Length: 120
Image (cartoon, rainbow, N blue to C red; front, side):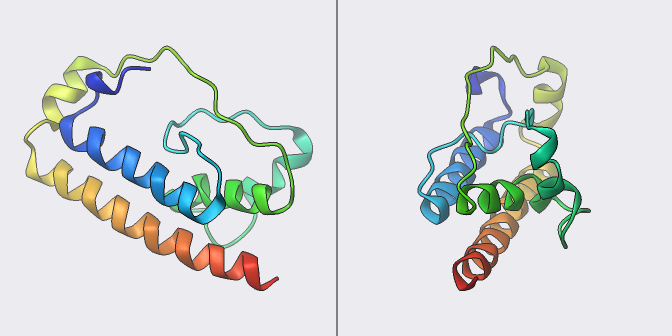
C-alpha cells in the first residue's frame, strides 16, 4: 500500500490514529485501512454495542478482540488511492478538517473504550 497516493492530510492523520491505537492496545496495526476479515464467531464484535453507527465501530471492536485474546493482525495490501479522490481532497479545508476531527474523535473514543475494557 502506498500512503503517497493518499491526500496529504490523510497521510498524516492515519498514521497518528494507528499510533493512538497502538498506545491503547499494545498492538502495532494499520487499523485505519478499511478491509477486515473475520470469523463468523467474531462477527458479533462488529454488530453489537454502542458504536454500530459511527467510525468507532471499525476500531473499538478490534480493541475488544485484542483484550479478549483473539488473534488480530495486519496484512500488507497493494492499494492505490483513486487519484481523482486525492486531487479533490488535497488542499480542501473541509476534508482537512474532517481528518483532524476524525483523529480527535477516535482518540477520545479509543481512550474511553480502553478504560471500560480495563475496568472489566
